[in-house]
Length: 300
Image (tube, rainbow, N blue to C red; front, side, top):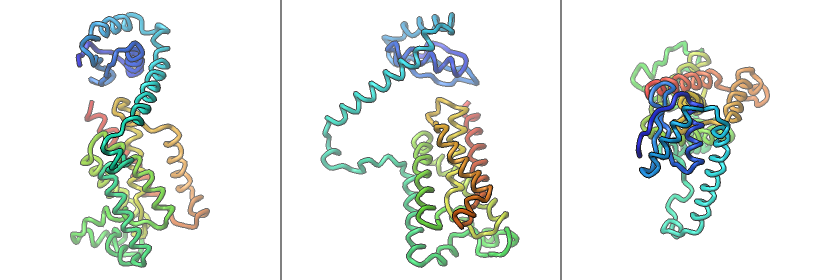
């Protein structure tokens, strides 16, 4: 792979990358600094062709032929994906005969979090709800919004800052939380590794749980604060670092923010008859957005 030059501006980088791909020149666009991008050519025999295309593009970037390249590139990618899928269906390897984890695309840490939540929920459903809550809640002091100042945590039980995320209040509660956890957690884990995902989970869980405690007291549970943190992280990371491989469709972001708004408005509590940890949701989202932006600055 050979670096052939630089191009200024995110839109120009995307357009030129699509144009090269449409012309049969495999390439990779990497952010160098700020809005400046590196143009890499994958095959050595295409380096000179790529250089010539780069010179031509920089001399006239508004040429309509470049704007039409995005659609052609998309069609080419779709065709390649369909061909690959057709080929995969014809191939029978050892895993096709004796599949090991077939269809399991979930990241390992993400899967571990899902399993822990599932085990804790099962214990709750088997009648151990009170015992589980006493061990995993942020505090056993019930009066007021944090009026007793996290006694257990100050006495060394620091796990309580995180462990409320493993408890859930019902089947729908845990189902939707784990569905979003699987999607968002896997994206981060595969793109940036399980250690970074673990760091995000610990930070968003601690801050969102503390925020909820000091507003409403310790009677809350669920991993939704972390889920909103992961949402904010992937959303902002994809927005400010488009080549990070992280992206959320606008419809997903809108639906999650709509759900947050309905919770804050009190509509969900009245309609469902259950309490909503709105402060944890807002706190998790804010922390996730901040971490996503700071990580983008660090990468730059």
